[in-house]
Image (tube, rainbow, N blue to C red; front, side, top):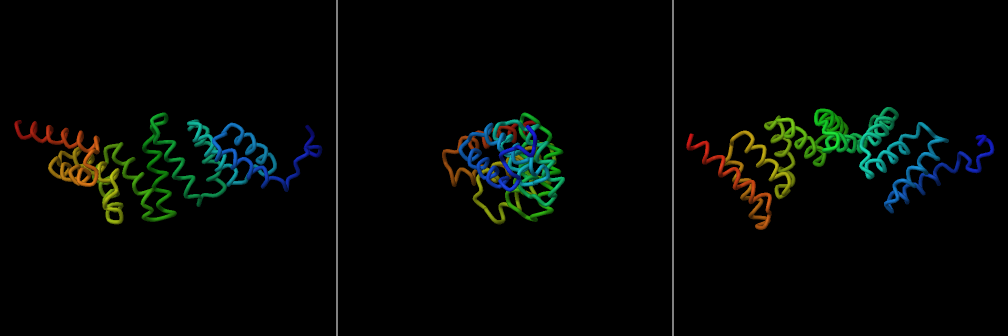
Length: 204
């Protein structure tokens, strides 16, 4: 179709964007992507459109496509905190498992918003996954200074301590979780594993 005969004028891009976002919110990601594409025909360098299209790909678990569009958005707007976070989440997913690249994204996010607790948590998880346990603990500690009852962070700090063979300290963190949530299965299991490891080390 000739561009001049297209019934959607350029000034309707915002309407297309809004409709795409409604479809996205309703869970209709494939249709949302079609509307993002239509809007991008008129504004191919619109960083928000590129970013929002990436989110729909991410929701569909199409992480390679999502990363491609987060990259396109970031080339236009390198100050997009959310794009770095979401790109990092895609890269750190089991499907992609690119933890070093994910770590870079979380580091860039923290340059933009220093001490953001979500970014610090994600940085800690990425560091832990590549064996940089002490650095991961530093991130977890910063989060716990503000949110001392954050269960996931307490558990992950305990895990990092276990990886460093600091089993008594790890058990203390799992006990803290169990004080808050006595039925937390993961804390119970990890505490038992840490106790067993500590006993084996003692018997060597």
